[in-house]
Image (cartoon, rainbow, N blue to C red):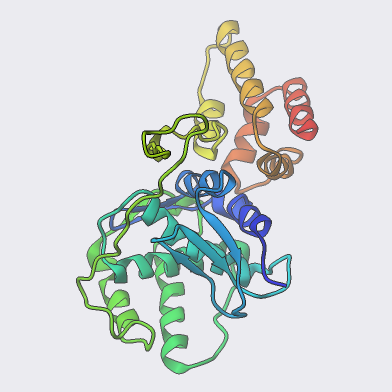
Length: 295
């Protein structure tokens, strides 16, 4: 049986996605961008179809459809990274980014490799077709060079000179040789049908910028948790706790489960987990963890 819609959502909600934050050309590979895709999948505006190919998944910008690969569910890290590759193409489409098709592919491979290294810091490429083996190894080299899989690499902006050679190498591979260098990725956006609001022809669309996204992103929580208050600022401390409670109460189930694993114990190297434990009282942490557990 092929991978399912739930497998795609689980991938997008995984802890490793929350740790991704870098730029390639105009593409911001980060939790917030993947959240945009996730929301559209959950609403049905991006359709997930179970495919028949055991090695390939595919995102179609014209039909706004993501076709999964035909492997057993739940997917392993390799299979999840391929789903993330296609969801990266979806980011480009959703945000209508004016980049080339080759850059679109390159970004997806860099995101896929970053995901693998986040999941397994000692990940090594399995030997296969020599040109592809070399390309994947060079993707690993790029990710490690700029520490895209490490906390210190968060927010990195890759310059054209940083990845142009890798894009040229990609263009030389059999799947991409026929693509013109300057061919556009053709991102055309994903139309969204708001319930109960239709135009004269029976359809109505709104920009994905108006879609309500989860407030409890890593960036949002870290900023809130690391904010300093004077010891006498009772209102400041209390306001932060109330805001956290409000966000946790509306956190979706899968996201709540992911946060719970990071908040129940202090995880060294996880900035969000460390901030949660170091900047909140024991009583507050117990209360907030209880809210997440109830979700």
